[in-house]
Amino acid sequence: MLFFDIVIDDDNVRKKIEQIYNLYKKLLFYTAYSILKDYHEAEDVVHMAIIKICNHLDKIEEIECNKTKAFLVILVRNIAINVYNKKRRITDIDMERLTDLEDENINPEEYMLKVENAEWIARKLASINPEYADVLVFRYTYQFTIEEIAYLLNTTEGNVRVKIHRARKALHEIMKGEYFENAE
Amino acid sequence: MQNRKQEKQNILMSAFYGYIGEHHVDNICDEIDSLKEEIDKIEIPETLDDWFDGYVKNARKKDNQKRINVKMRSISSKTAVILLVLFLSFVTLTFSVEAFRIQLYNLLFFDHDEYSNIKIEQEPAEDKTTIKWKHYYYPTYLPDGFYIENAKEIENVREIKFFNNSGEYILFVQTPNGTAFSLDTEGGEKKEVEVNNRKAILAKKEGKNILIWNNDEFSFYLISNIEIENLIIIAESLEIK
Image 1 (tube, helix red, strand yellow):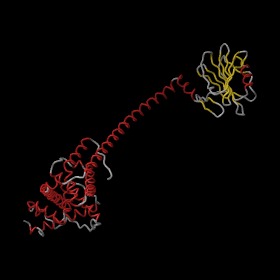
Image 2 (cartoon, chains in turn blue, red):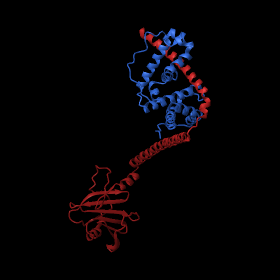
Image 3 (cartoon, each protein chain N blue to C red):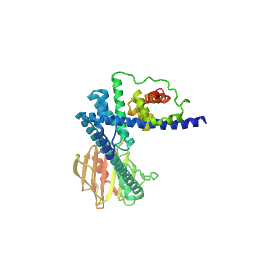
Image 4 (cartoon, helix red, strand yellow):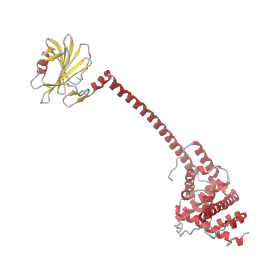
């Protein structure tokens, strides 16, 4: 049995988590199971996700919307990937030297001209590594701090930083045209 | 200037990443929609629902416990304030009203192994070995070596305490007839004796001898760890002063 580390301290909060669970339990379980292919492990991952969601319920404003749905899928998917990697003893991430990407080579104006292809860019980034796209969403779309992301994804702050760094690097490569040539 | 430019660029790039993220969110939702049938078909283990119910129930229990604790804390702090007010009122009354003070001092006695020693802490500067009362009884006989250690009057109760250097003591109390006083003689020996041809009660308990008698005017008692015979001689030797 997983460790209960949360006090759901009022009726409204309790109702909110019950609504989320009832509406998305199949989606959560499906997402975890599709990665782990094991009922028990998938169940454990859903437990972990629910506990983590309870700690960040304030970030969920509307229950039935795309943003919440995607947040839950990203959360469960990443916890499941971590469980999968640990089980197969795949080391998380080699810490590499984080070269600063606030680099001189970036030309934001040029990037802005390409935003009409944002959907394709997002898809391309996810195809390189879905974790990169997920961590980027948590950081810049949901505005979680590094510490919060580390807690939500069951990893260290160092790993989160490396993932964000790599995600941005991959995105810049996409933007520079290495992948753009093949767009549509 | 360079930093400022960098800062602006970072803000712009953060917005850009956020925007790409929004599309990633939409892409995920599209993917979920395309898998809707498959997701709806999946069987959820019953144990998952059980776990969730237990989790919520446990949270509710903790919540109730938390509420009770908060309530208890609030009640106990109010109780503490009330007790403090009562205590302060008691202290004020004790030190400002003589009757209360006397009641309190009556409680301040020390129970030794062999005897009960009443010790009054009031007005320490006063000489307590000199008797300044008028119209009181005093024993003309005292065994050798006894001296007045303390004499005091509380309301109409007059007490004289005698000691000697061997640790023996005599407590002599006189009070107008009609004053009630109780002595703990439970489990002790009691018998009737005579003092100046009047009936007296002699009690013996835990090494203490207690003699109680009266005359037309006063009631007396003697408490001591000396011999009974000596106590009776002392009782018979009273003289009015």
